[in-house]
Image (cartoon, rainbow, N blue to C red; front, top):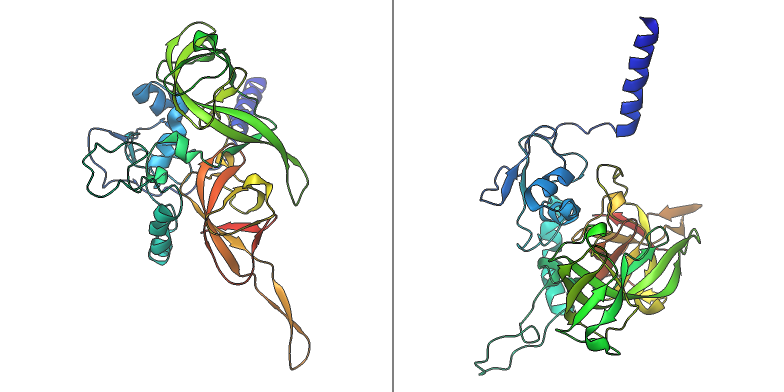
Length: 366
C-alpha cells in the first residue's frame, strides 16, 4: 500500500504545483447589484475562459469580459455567486481607480474626452445624419471602436509573432481602401470565425527597456481594421471596415488582444513598473501624449486602469545639520488604453509640478 500512497501524494503535490497560486481570501459575492439578461452568475468550477466559450462561443473574449467587470480584480479568481456582465457592446466602465480616489480624479477623467480622440463637431444648423467624422466627443475609452482605441499602436513583444498577413487585395490592386475585400492567410485551422475583427498593421522600430536594456519588441503602427466574412480552411476573406493609410499586401493582421490562455498562463498582479517608450520615439512626455509601460495582462493590467508616474526621492540639506531625503512625488497620471501580454499603451491624462515625464520613470497603481 505504501507505494500507492506515495503515488497519490505525488499526484496531489503535482496538481497543486500546476495550479501555482494560493487563492486570496473569499471576498463574498461580487457584482450583486447587476441584473439583466446579459448577466451571468458564476457557479463552482467556472473560469472566465469557460464562461466565454459556453456563453459567447469564443473563449478568447475573456479579456473584454474582464474589462467590463471592474469588480473582478484578478481574472484567475472568480467565485460562486459573482455576477458578471457579458454585454460586450456596452460601454467599458470609465475608470478603475480605487474607490477612494474617484472623486479626486473625476475632473481629469471627464477632461480626457475633450483632450484626446475628440471628433469633429457637426456644424450648427445642419440637419444631416451624424457620421463617424461628425459625432461630438465619441470616447473610445467608453466604447468599442478598435480604430480609435488603438490610435497609439502597441508594442509587439519578442515572444509574440504576427498572427497573419494579407495575401491578396480586391481585383489584385496595389492597395486597398475602406469597403474593399482582402484575403489573409489564416482560416478555420487557426480558429478564425466569421465576424472576427482584426487590426491591420506594420511593424516599425525596435523598443528596448530604458532601465534593464532588455529588448521588449517592436512598435506596431495600425493601418486599419478588417472584419472576417468568409472563412476557409487556411484562408479568410474579409472587408476593410476602417483605414488610416492605404492597405497593402504583406501587411500583418492580428487580434486586438494577444491570445493568452487564461487556464494555462497564470496572471500575477504586479503593478510597479516603468515607462519604457514614448510615441514617435520622443524623450519626454506631457499631458495628452501616448506612452508605453512594461506591465500588461499577465501583471493584472487592463484598459481603464490608472497609474501614478513617480519622480525620484530628493536629498536636501538640513539647516540644523545633515542631509534629509524627501519622498518621491507624483509627476503625473496615465490611463491604460490597451493592454497586451506584458506591455500596455497609455495616455498621459495629467502632469504636475516642474518635472517632466521621462523614459524610465517609475509607475505605481492608483
